[in-house]
View: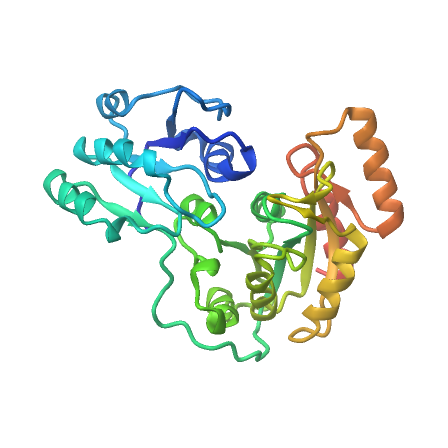
Length: 337
């Protein structure tokens, strides 16, 4: 997709940073394209960019209003439509990664036709997705997985792809979620694919490639999640990863939004992914642990990482602090490249 930058990111009155991951992701990975944020008076979050109104944004030449949240169920809140319509009337494109489709709203479609605004719904998969075949493909694949949602799969995949690129390794980031697609400009929104075709979509996203090429695949959901485990399993089966990295929030104790479910241990996460991953790739291997340690002090962080390294015998890093060089070094040993 071709997006019209710079962006104004709408986070409305969102209070939970977990659900503002689209906004945070764009600021982290495409800061040069972000002009500002639009927050309602009760908003407790701050993306660290200027606050702008729609009129301010239009006067500054902003090209698109981006829906910056990814809430449970993916519904556009009722009180956001006034702002969205205002942006359309000022000629801004609307980039929407939620399950609610802009194009299903007749009122906003009519306004967009008058102003020339484009309505870009990201969660629309291609129509020609096959059922997964499970057949072995050439090339190599790395998948990020996790103990829960919103704990670093996209960030880790992007960091690994950057690390591999700097090391001269032929790799491609493969986006599977709305924010990843906005960052890279391409991908398949896996959680919008009909269940029977999820593994086929993963195969389509990561086709045959050169033997030394790595697809670095953005993971979705968690095998341990009571609501989203299905998409995680389909992506695991279809990706047929040679390697995977487990992502985990060091301070999270329960499934976010499902507080009646405890998080699994990192070791449990490794074991289950190896067991299920062997369905389509018998040689699947865990190559590292990626941690969000932002909630720990420096002393707690060092102690936590050292204990986890000892427990798993794997490199354990926070990619935003440590980078992913240790994981890449371990991968080179495991896969002899």
